[in-house]
Image (tube, rainbow, N blue to C red; front, side):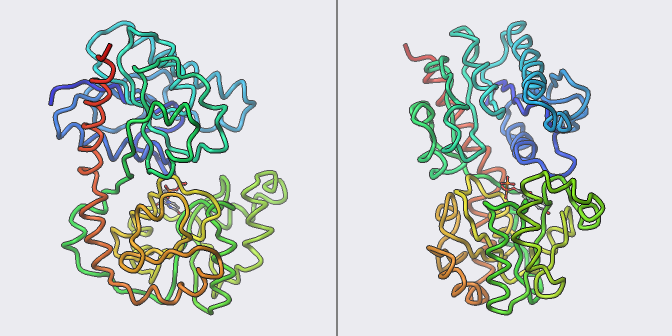
Length: 380
Ligand code: UDP
């Protein structure tokens, strides 16, 4: 396949990201597989990105994540400066066959604004968009600009204008799924885990309450707002409460955290994260929001840990009830299912991940979408 794709990962973090970083992780997982399939990749990101690519475009020397705390107009300033750099590059060359854009709203509008002479663009939606239709007002690029979701459920909830421009969905993937069917099972500890940002949507408060009800230990792993370690949060004092996720943690989760039955271990990374996830009896997702893509869900499967979740968002697409996990309609039902997760076969989870959630599967699907978007752009 000979095609040159400009991959726009935005100015916020380097690729791969130094720690947490959703979009940047997806790009870091996708690009090596695309290049294996013969796609030339020009990465629009920040100069400090180390992902091997064919060419880089950047405006900022390193990730501008800190700027997200600044007033809104300054945040937009960073976005616009990055996107002007991308657009300048696009205007000065004619070898880009397609733009694969991951930058929310502004990116899409900018691609659209390039007019009919710009290359076709595919924008990947990463967020739950039902509450933010205003972000996506401008789709003037018409048939040249298309979107894809990270799950069918995310697209079904997206604003109409996006649905009309959709070319389908591509589930997220994880390098942990490669060869997962050939790995032997890890020793399971006596605990469940919730891996993710501590946030009302992810429902750690519900999980902690259930753990206490059924008397089964629960480990909470993930940051609280910008705080990655319990000691950092403690040291931040009252000022930290300005962050809504910190307030949620103190008001609804911390009262259950006793350091014994329910523990918060902060952000885990690398081998420590994988071992903790592989050693859990079940990975819990007591969701209160419509999970758009669920990287932690596919990571759990890849490491042989069944998923027990509220059947919201993408969960029913990723998990087969009774085989790779258990899905509940509500919190009460979730409580009944938690202890039954131990009966599921972890090898089934690993087989499912190896078949459906590898980076190669994701890249193949994106190449098909790239072809489709290019064809649609050529049609009169
Ligand atoms: N993550 C991690 N350490 C933590 C908590 C989360 O490495 O302590 C990772 C997790 O493994 C996953 C990503 O952060 O790769 C979260 O992505 P997901 O799609 O599950 O949730 P999001 O935060 O994007 O809603």
